[in-house]
Image 1 (cartoon, rainbow, N blue to C red):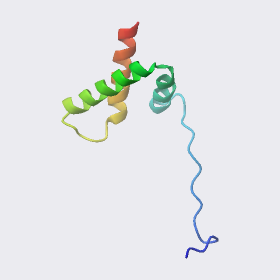
Image 2 (image 1 turned 45 degrees about the vertical axis):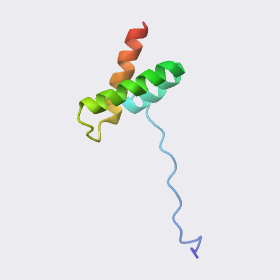
Image 3 (image 1 turned 180 degrees about the vertical axis):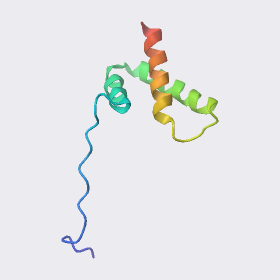
Image 4 (image 1 turned 90 degrees about the vertical axis):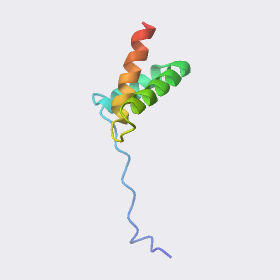
Length: 74
């Protein structure tokens, strides 16, 4: 049994700076319709495949896909 006094407390959730790319992604995703989110998700996956499925660039793929989708909508 774990002694609750010695158990580490979880770190509080970090607030994302809205000026960061993650913050921008979170802010713009809420503004997208569900169909635009689906298209963005599909395009981001295509970009991931084009890159050879290498890890570590998920955010860049999503932001690029989102920008493409938003540009087409306008």
